[in-house]
Length: 135
Image (cartoon, rainbow, N blue to C red; front, side, top):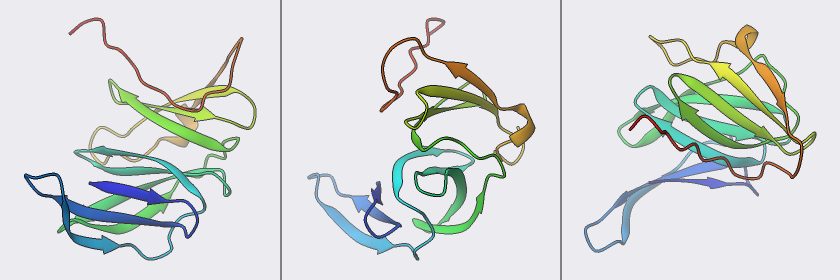
């Protein structure tokens, strides 16, 4: 289990026990700027940095957040993340858009030059969830 701690810029990682309780919790260094959403994949942990307007991709080792890199792409207050078909979708609360960015198939790193902005007609993208119709 990974929990974003927006107020202090950290991520807490814990083991979830069979009874639903947590154990072996670790708090990362202060690596993030107002982390609002996190997304765990086989390639790593993606974290929105709301205040810095970037996305971090971190490696996980022994249930701990390690070696994070920040995207070069600047978003508009990224709030939410979702992933499908090796594309990372970022909901931007600052301008009511969603970005679609390709991920490197080997490393999972965000490919800044591939990001495309999708304008929304209504609403504010606080959370993203993508339903796959092909499954």
